[in-house]
Image (cartoon, rainbow, N blue to C red; front, side):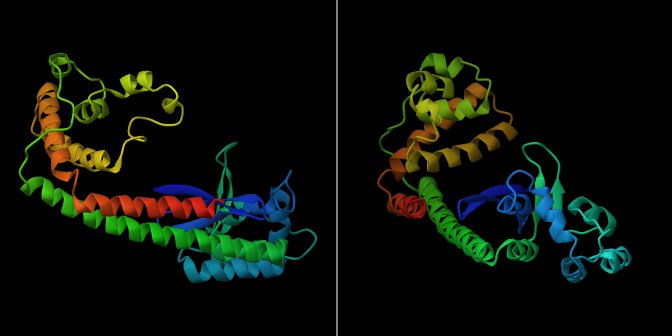
Length: 294
């Protein structure tokens, strides 16, 4: 179930709330929400909340609507017992006994916690504080809106990349602006395939770049500091290198071919209109992130 897991977070009234995306479903950290009420023992508000009869009824209804493997018999037992002084419930027990999917509980000191589907997380937040719930919904919707915006940009960027790749394969080449390989570079054996691409495009390995740029290397690598044009070419080189490997070409031969391809592509694309459009898209993303972080 935890395949394709993606993590992010939102800020709700100065509380960092983790969001765990599994496939196309988001789960909000109940543990982080509970810290709004008890920063030291967040598991306690969650357990207190799950002792309520109305909560158990709501959780059971949600599972019945969304989980074909939900164990209704066990749920009925919990529903009858909920609300009494002796009734105790935890996320782990609920999941184990009913086969619930709306709540996920992960163990681990740094990566653990209890997460829930937004339908359930919003109910918990409302129990904590109606005001807190409203702010949570607002920030969660902002996150989803940003994701949709980013997806639109990525779709448009991929469309432009397709056009650029077509230009690379059809245009004539006149001059070269990527460093030519030295005889030593052509013969050297590189341990990492990533460095084969780095040398082909930038004329240096990742280590050589770090040694030449110690301050920049503290916050990133050679690819983090390159421009959009180089990244477009790099994407094409990665595909080409994969094909060369399938064909059984030795590394030295691949390196020479990749370097020639990089120089050809750079010349074709350096003044291309599509690159300018991609740069505008990148600026839009950067400006949007900057404004929202203020």
